[in-house]
Length: 424
Image 1 (cartoon, rainbow, N blue to C red):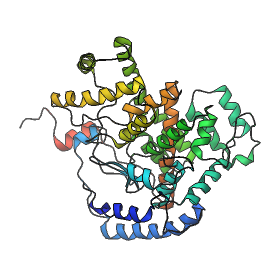
Image 2 (cartoon, helix red, strand yellow; image 1 turned 180 degrees about the horizontal axis):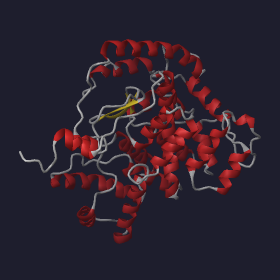
Image 3 (tube, one colour; image 1 turned 135 degrees about the vertical axis):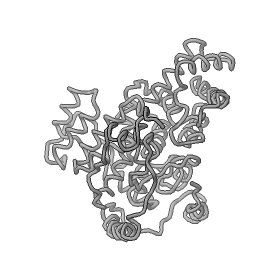
């Protein structure tokens, strides 16, 4: 699909953003997100009601048996308002590409990357927030950052299961109902979410803070059909509370085919360095890639939908070129980027030979001292919470029903369409 309906965006953004990148907004200036939603939700409810009344019986697409056995790929069956993935342009957050988000979303006073708080406001409301609105969210989240003592105690005893920690938080609607633990450092309400998150991890590096702002923004949402997002939606459709829904999504994110992909990339890159040293020649790299392709795939390359280099990869590459151009691991990633796509194209079987987001993120995290690869899924989950919670808000606001697709047995399908051994 060509995004003709968004052709107005460049001119619009040019009018909304001054030369010094300050954002102005024609929408309500309230910094209270709930108040803004009170205005928007009834209008959206009425719009969807009228749309369904006029078009509810129309077909969106056809389902094949291969789709049913193939993980439901290609089936249009989910409403997801916050983002949409285009094969050529990549992800759009409420219609905005990643470069557009980098340009128009509010930033920290001394920062260049967008604040995740601003992205969350955009995902929830569909509006580009003002600096004041993003700052209000920073303060609101900071006020909610203190953990109950029973959660901090659980954290100390069971430190390896992030989803379990989220589940324990569902016991009370408000943390204020329990005495808050004082041993875990709380956030500074004068700082933004990414700054506080980085500091709580034990780091004091402005560049890492900027990376976290970028990382938490670009990993936030990727349509609703991926495992983590769909799981949150599915569990939430049963009216499970947001903590339980998010915990379920985190368990899905921890699968090696989803949130662990950047770890596999790092392991593969480290194997190359172990075998050939830090200065790998083109011929050595081509030989290693050829050996890899004999038994599997090059990790970090290819995507189920995208047919170009993932824009999330590109913005991370630009960050690396600016801040760590001489890092040996980044140089290797860059060399892989020039060599792998032509090799995959020559195979003639690969629809997308380009790198995705996972081909780059781990290298940046390693450079800034985040060496524990098992923690990367936690980082991914922290970011993905923005998108799935924004979507859960609208699922509740629109009264979307419990998700309950119809399933069929293989015997039922054979009976309806004929078996493979049926004589023609």
